[in-house]
Image (cartoon, rainbow, N blue to C red; front, side):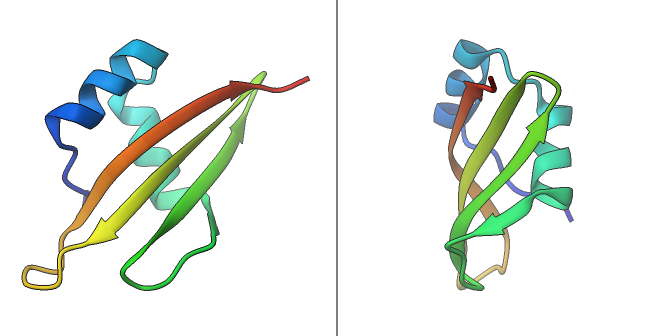
Length: 75
């Protein structure tokens, strides 16, 4: 099941040059950090950069929502 990506997060993705397929790969295959079942952060390293996301889980629907994204260069 893919997470919901709100317009604010999509705008940030465009600003950082992150495409949806990268974000979904990160969500499904990234490393969980500081995570609980209902909220947390995931990170994945790619060639030359690292991408992370923050998520929460909607208690009523069970759907995950990506609340924020970031990208940084790797040395």
